Image: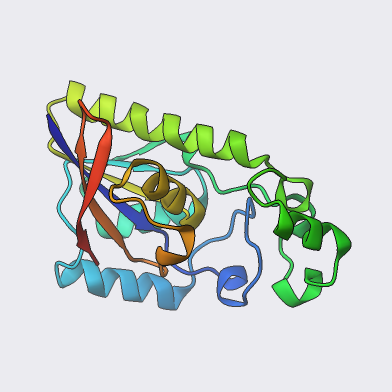
Length: 196
């Protein structure tokens, strides 16, 4: 059975556009981000959806309301941003010389950034969130579900489920943009159908 899933990154926040590691900071959208997303929604850039799932963080909930104002969002805690621990709110150039950062950069698949969330736990919760969302959508007879979440969550889902496989660096997800996936519920793989 085929299930469509729209993955959308939230709009820009103050810390995000300043190049900071936002992580678990709960910031609102910038006014200019709200305007940009509203304009794109009015132009029909975003695929239609029958159900909307979102991270609990304010920037995601606001983005969901702007894109899908008539559909109540279902908050999924497992869609939360990657916890970057001590690096939360800091810019790359502030931590690039840090010994802990250099050690993490050499072992990023194994070590948590800034003593935050371990990568294996992050990837597991993202995968479980996706599977829960697909199961919920299928049980309700929904053909297309939208997921408004964070860049690293989207990238981890694409790396895990999309074929053909592609390295992390190939998946840019600018603020307010995303992907439409066609997910095969039997084979448990997805194919990219649209980039927006």
